[in-house]
Amino acid sequence: MIPQEPFEMEISEGKILYDIIGYQDTSNFAISKRLYDLLKENEITGWRAYEVSIKGQSNSYYGFQITGRCSKLDIPNEAGFYTGYKFDSSTWDKSDFFSPDETMLLFCTEKVQKLFKKYKITNAELVDINAVQAYSVGNL
Image 1 (spheres, one colour):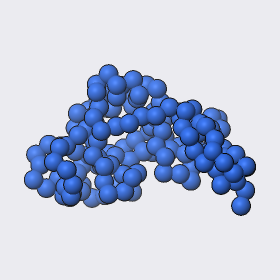
Image 2 (cartoon, helix red, strand yellow):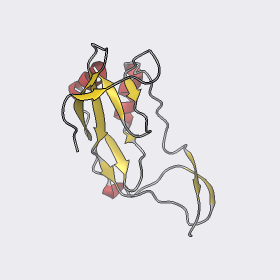
Image 3 (cartoon, one colour):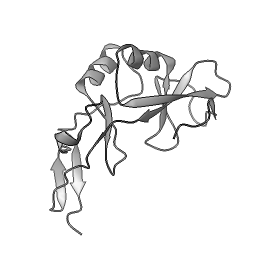
Image 4 (cartoon, helix red, strand yellow):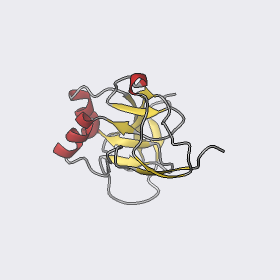
């Protein structure tokens, strides 16, 4: 669902506006016009955006939503830590941004990672999904 535009926002913490501005929850955020334009110019797929208006700011920002998908993650049946997120690659829609079913995780392709690095996108931490340490509660 895309909110009515422009979506009115107010800054509650911090004074510096980065390329990515987090909302009060972990899975929603806004992106700068610079990042919005960069994603459009490079034909990055798997996302959509809506205009936001930040009270007291003249810089343009956009609410960011990931539309790309893949199947849910393959979680080990045994309880304990494991390394790397895995999913059935045949279920991935091949979008540059995507999210596994039944999670709030946000994944991107190496193309996006290289773009973020080249243009020094601020307030973003990209981690290789093969190196992530996660915990399985096992079969309950």
